[in-house]
Image 1 (cartoon, rainbow, N blue to C red):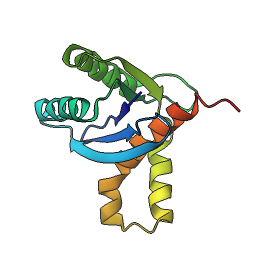
Image 2: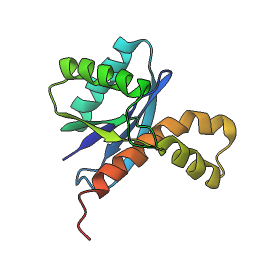
Image 3: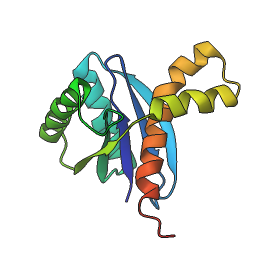
Image 4: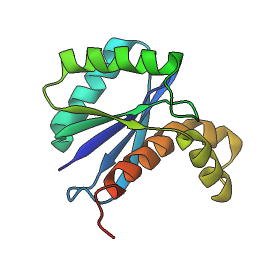
Length: 138
């Protein structure tokens, strides 16, 4: 099953997609959050082009596991997505994915100006890989 992950942000939305087997997460791109209609159009295009069967949206949680104001924004975002796309949508804990993405990009010697462009899609890939790995039996 092919999954498209969205790292929700107020300025940019990071996108990542799984391979056809649903084993590996691949960073795709980032899309500006505004105008929102253009973002939704791009998501629909990707769903059609890549034959995506499920959307995975990062759910921000506090370190103690509770939900804060950012989670309410994501819940509202998911509600709009559900009215727009005809495939299942699932949320997934995204704690520390942006931090991990920044560390990864620093270790890969990505310049600061390029890191800003890549951090959202990298965070989406980390989120998606976490989800995909949850199905692997030890």
